[in-house]
Amino acid sequence: MTSTAIVINEEQAQIGRSPASGPTAAPWWTTAVVYQIYPRSFADSDGDGVGDLPGVIGRLDYLKTLGVDVIWLSPVYRSPQDDNGYDISDYRDIQPEFGTLEDLDALIAGAHERGMKLVMDLVVNHTSDEHPWFIASRSSLDDPKRDWYWWRPVREGFHPGDPGGEPNNWGAAFGGSAWQYDESSGEYYLHLFSTKQPDLNWENPEVRAAVYEMMRWWVARGVDGFRMDVINFISKDTALPDGPVTRGRWGDGHPFYVSGPRIHEYLAEMHREALAGRHLVTVGEMPGATVEQARLFTDPIRTEVDMVFTFEHVSLDIGANKWEVHPLRLTDLKANLASWQLGLAQVGWNSLCWNNHDQPRAVSRFGSDGEHRVASAKTLGTILHLHRGTPYIYQGEEFGMTNAGFTAIDQYRDVEAIGLYAEAGAHAVDSAVILAALASHARDNARTPMQWTSGDNAGFTTGTPWLPVTPNHDTINADAAMADPDSVFHHYRKLIDLRHTDRTVTYGDYRPVLLDHEQLFAFTRNLEADTLLVLGSFTDQHLTIELPEQAWVDTAELVLGSHSRKSETPAAGTLTLRPWESRIYRKR
Ligand code: TEU
Image (cartoon, helix red, strand yellow):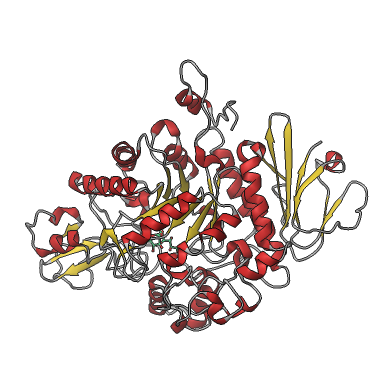
């Protein structure tokens, strides 16, 4: 570690400046690569068909070989599993099918022994309806916890429980109204997600205090940070106004709860009460957040969160409804990522991710998952990991796992897929249309079991997997990728290594190149006198390009390429990339 600080921006320099010694080093997570584990689908140690914590512990050496620094664990808390753990009924215990608190302690210790950190998912926009807080809240109108959730009476002029009687017109993320009528108390409660995920009322200081206390409990247990689920939804406009109706029955409540009136106050308070002064990392999952908002959320001087997950680049190929899918234009993708790179260049910090447990597989969505699967998976990795920010790898991405290939609704398990299918049916959308949209975009695409081997159930379980294993595990699996020096896996290892060792990769300025090109993703990174040029072909054809940088590319050092053998010598002044080829050049 050098003492010459990497100064991310002016204000950070001011924060980091100690009177005698000048600027201190940038935060540790600026050189980190994060690996997301979806525990249900990662590794099953006891044959019940569901992944578990001992299964994760058994794969820590695999993660160490890959070289990642941080593990983000999707929720393992006690939960009825209506939304696979994003519906929590006890924040301080582990769901028995995943293991015990002792297993979690062992996982933290095992990660730490290997020099890795562990980040927990923090789901506090809502709880499960089976959480004791909600059970108390719904028990009577004057229970002390009544106000911990959003309860409202029936809309004037309606009978409780009748259609139209909902307190406002908001639709829920998984279909239907965002309000559920509770017969015993005669009121409705708000749930932005499933009916089993009632929203907590953050206006109530007791709710906030209870959340912060719980966070401190986990920090004391040794966790190294939090990924905060839909954290920009926690502050709502307390008038809860009707939202605009663009189509169908339900209105859009987003304007009244995305980055709501008190969001910055709550995040700063959370930081003060639960995070400050500790060596942690935080990432806020923020659907609907703009670059301008993200700059505020991640400006270090405001002490809110370290980075946010944006949804903009994963919304470019879908319409107002998730079944309205259309092809992605590379120019749109490049323009969007560039706007985040440039928008957070002076203040704040980006997270970098192609996919997670809610999104289709990157190689199937942004790449080409047939003949050019390996090349396109490597190139996607290269493009993402050469951006400025903290890269996230979703389990299986590191050897190019693909979408599930489901063709019938009964193959899906996800509450969202099932809800969307019903909702589309209610809109008289042809079932072939919705099945095609689910095949390309459903969340279960990312949730099929991790493909460890070519053997039975891909080595994931000795029992019956909770979601079918993808048949292509006979060729696409971790074992095969580790054995092949030209694999996606070994390419990812090199990318992770660059993040750790190359200061230009980590801190260099980002400049887009040929933004209007429909098939080429290109940009430079620059730090002091050092310049990198990153080129990625996004086509199944050979691609000949003329670069403004061509003059120096001819004599440049090839830092890393997707293809091991040299291609044919191109005509003077041009450069030819093979299908989905990528190269990183360093100017000499
Ligand atoms: O997802 C937040 C979110 O906005 C989702 O609705 C996401 O946009 C959708 O899944 C994309 O199709 C988080 C979690 O990551 C997700 O798994 C949970 O279901 C959701 O919050 C509720 O906790």
